[in-house]
Length: 146
Image (cartoon, rainbow, N blue to C red; front, top):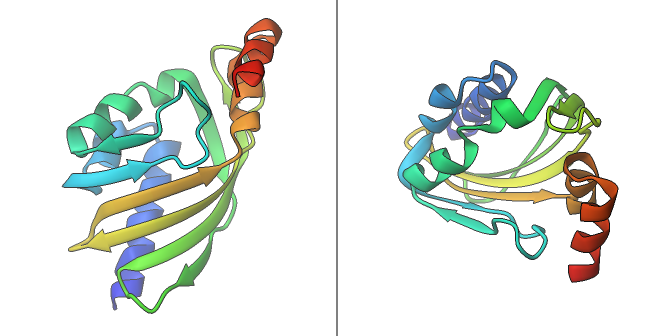
């Protein structure tokens, strides 16, 4: 039962991104949720604490990215029924600031409680994000700083 409700939360997560509905997106999170980006490059957000911080970070996502299709997710459940690992990809997407493709692969570790996300650990390829978001000179500078 918990696994199905966790899958449903993830489905709503993806749907809200596709529909560019950040109000719906943020309602999936607990007030004290933690959102982490372990692979984020230096100078980029690594951790967001609390629903308000997550919303502040994500609210302008639809003005930066146009995601139109995700792959079918693969779910892996742990012994803890509240924690799942999800593998998925953006199969169709682009950045709106550069018009470059944004085709990202994710492995996300998601903990839910009472149908809310309490902890989201987002593993993604930072090089794909940097190439999509930055011009050549800015990309070179970002890579030199790593």
